[in-house]
Image (cartoon, rainbow, N blue to C red; front, side):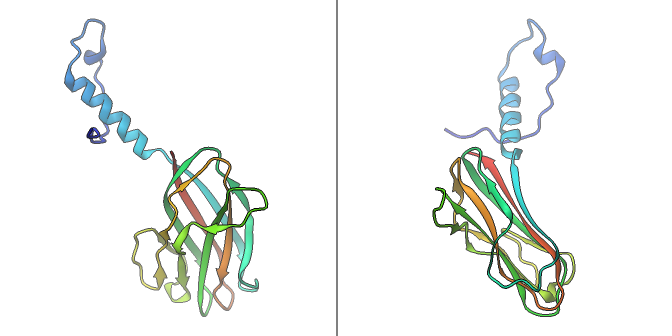
Amino acid sequence: MTAVPPSRQIMQLEELRFRAAVSEATAQKLGSSVNFFLEEIYEQKAWFVNGGYGVLSTPFVGIDGMEFMFTNATLIDAFMFIKTAGSSGSTSLDIKYATTPGGSFTSIFSTPPSINYQAGNYAWVYVGSSFANTTAPILGTTSLLQGTALRCDILSSQGGTPIACGIVLRHQPA
């Protein structure tokens, strides 16, 4: 079957009153509105490094704690950002997941995001973007099960005195 195209539709009172004619147009509006909201609903997980991080030995594993999936999820995007650039090199962050306590962690990316110092202050990158001096993330895993644990690792950091970076993972209930 073909999905009803998602569209934000406003229902009119006259369409829904008692004894109003039920029509295919009303059903189309309902279907397209429901699909619109289902596509727009998402949750996010975020990891932030506040303050200077150029002094950390990399890889630095498990920065800013762990997050957990409370439902099955489909990964849809990842945004990485840098607040204040350093003076050399690149910062690269990775999100890794484990499905059992004490188990090994695996990257969700086939290519993790990276931002070079030349991108400047307040630089960001996300899946599908193509900004100068950045490497856009490519999701290698797009579905996670309920109970999965997530952590963020700093793979590399810009030299000098970079300040604040982070990554936000967007997902939809599966």
